[in-house]
Length: 95
Picture (tube, rainbow, N blue to C red):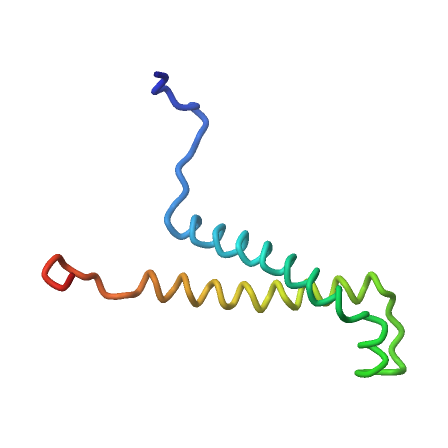
């Protein structure tokens, strides 16, 4: 068994791990939400309902939708991570 680690490897702090986890999970969630949402709705049709005079392409609509879902997912994930980290510690008596 090899126990030697790469000498250039650095350990991430707990905060960096939390941020990376939130960003990655929210990215994956936004990707799935975008696929499901735009499988049903066309961005051009949505745009004509919201602002008929604004001209954006279909790709721009997909991008706006993806970033909208990413922001919402990141906010939800960040609140969840914050709640987990700030929860009071339970000792063995309360289990």
